[in-house]
Image 1 (tube, rainbow, N blue to C red):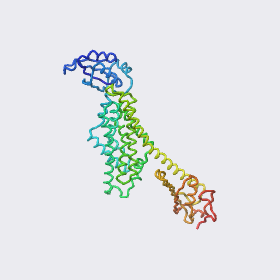
Image 2: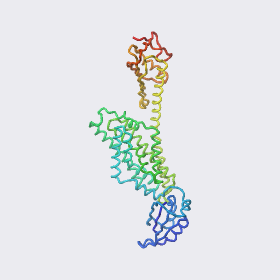
Image 3: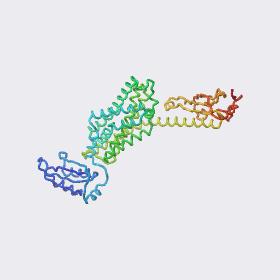
Image 4: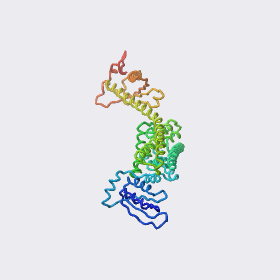
Length: 456
């Protein structure tokens, strides 16, 4: 519930009270003895969803911008007439006046914004290098990115170019500052003993997660933008939603900066693309939700022009996301291909060993070195097989080629296979009988060729 206080301009008292009567609002009127421009003050309660409707009727009745209007949240209203008022104004959406005020409050002063942004980037960069998800989440609590993201959309919907420009400027410059901060921090840390001199950040899981963006990353950003808009319209959980928005932007921005610091343009570019896609997705989701909720400019006559601007901006952002989504789609497809190949290869090799059932010989490990970049560059997947054999068994000299031929035939692509052997020992009361040779399995890598294989 909201308590609204409005100063009634001279000569409009009767029309203002008539408008309130038509809206079915209970009110109290007090004579104004202050400035001579006003003859009275009217005070009345109204549900949040009814503020905009009532204020529009008061504007039509003569309450102009020069008047004072105060909208106060109330904790408790005791009245038997309250239920009728709630039925008249159902819903939970706040008024555009409150939305505008909240958007202004969310965008902090420039000095405060950049101070918190740089600090959050420093913490996030530390979390990336430590591979600590908890540290990265802690950095998101500090990041102040929700305000600019929401204020840019609110400014567009309510036709406030100044608010829109400031929101967009803070987002763009803030993320560039985050990338620069991470790059400087990464360069300085390389000159110290705090990180190993041969550290490859591409092997850090938290970094890899931000350098292999796919469509799931887009869902995170869209959900964050929608959650931010809903939290502002409903006045609930905006601080926690701000964490979600920051998660979509600060870690990939810090990753991009580390890519620059370590001289890895691939890391820097892929993470920067993720930042840009997430930024656009957050803005378009908030913009669409505000527009769909029916918010209109403070000046009613500007609605048609604003609707055209909103539509143009939505289409522009959507096209940009679609273009960048080509990259996301390529990463998603190549990641699926590499992971599928890895799983199928391990399953096939394990199946061969299970069917062979060679006493004393065991499959120790299978690793597949195949990345999305390899697919794009046409590189062969590399399969590394480690086999444990007893000391008295001779390793087949061409087992790697046999696996190569089998995998090439099965998957229809060239592969590179490396087979390594280690001595395996089994603890038993009686040592196993030495195997007479590698068993024969039709069409498998263990198929006995002419002469077979015998232990030394």
